[in-house]
Length: 315
Image: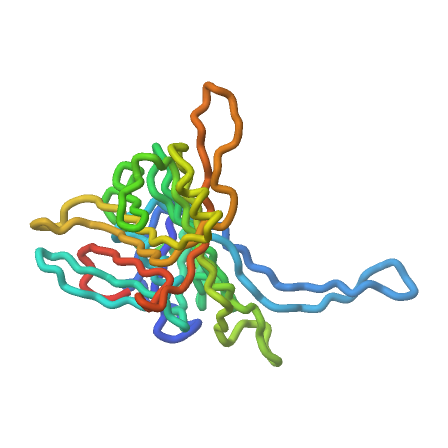
């Protein structure tokens, strides 16, 4: 036994073709990817025994994560995978800004999973969505939902993997702004969820998924807050739209440049109940504020993520 457990991910240049090992970014994350043969067992007629089985769609589904978010580990790759476009700018001092924006086409990925002396390999993987969470007292975490319509293989070789040495972002590294005003001091948790609603529909003559088709992009979230006033409730009642900015800032790269992830949500609306409920006096009054994210025509996006790190090439 080699006692190696790791996940590697790399963007494919050709859908469903395994990427060379050198292009992989490795992470000490967990995963729950499961293959499903899509079997259908036919009920018998005239007897009780079932004797026939049909093969259906081969699919691999599951999650990668939760993984602690670092500026150069697997998390930014998964965010890019869920959005689809990356534009790189040189900031100087060895720092580069990756502006990750939504696209109507998504990249596909090869995934390697090291399991002691075996390696699972999945190709044609699509990031169907993610959930990003930052909770008081914990590291910021990301869980990505994965779908592949290609076959997986298991090999008897375990490859060399290298990991980022950077510290993950924590609850102390986050700043949340609502319409430009910082509200971090009254928050104890922020969650952001994105779903691409990939259409799982293949074609005749194949058990695999030969084309990636996307449904509506749905973005929502929740911030959990200590109760101070009825501003959030009034936003819900009046349908008031607002902009939300989530920023994670870490170690110094060089000069005044720091590792960071900044998420812009220019048009949000409170979705439902945003008022606290009666609870024991020994507990603080708290409220969960669920919100939906809409497309903002003046900015040209519903979400945009800027990752600042030392990677000079696009994802």
